[in-house]
Image (spheres, rainbow, N blue to C red):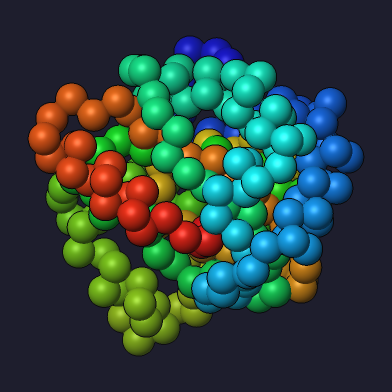
Length: 221
C-alpha cells in the first residue's frame, strides 16, 4: 500500500486495493456458503447474514485474520496498533439506504470489505459520500437529509452524489464506518464479507465505545 493510498483513506474515508486476496477467492466463497448454511441468519435492511464470520471457519480465519494481510492493512491505515473488532458475512437481496455504521466520537475503526461477486454501480457496489467520516461539523446533522433525500434534497436515494467503488472478487475496500454509505441496484444473492479493526483505545471514552461496539456487533453494511 502506497503513502498516497493511506492519504486517500484518511482524506476521503475509503480506499480500494486491487487483488489483495486473489489467491484465496475460491476457498473464501466456499467457506462463506458453508458458514451461512450452518448458522442462524440475522436479518437487516436488504439482507441477512452472520456475525464474526471469520471466527466460524478455519479457512476464513486463516484468510482474513491469521495471515496478517487485513490486520497489517488496518494498522497502516489507522497508524496505530489495532484490535480485531468483529465483522460479518451478509447475503444481500436489495438496496441498502444511506447510513453510518458508527457514531463513535473517540473510537477509530476501519471496516475491510471484500465482495464475492463483481460489482459496479448497476449491480450493488458500495457507494460512499467522501469526507463524511470526519468527526464533528455539519456532517453530523446530515443524517436527517439522507433519511428522506427526495423530500429534503429533491433527489432519489440513488441520485445522491457519491463515489461508487467498483470491485472484483479478491479486491479489498477499506472504509471508515462513520462515512455515509449505501448500495443500490444490486441483484439478489450478492455476498460480502467484512472484518473490522479498531485502534487500541488510549482513553476511557475510546475503551467505553469499543465495549459498546463489541456488544452491538451484528450483520450490516
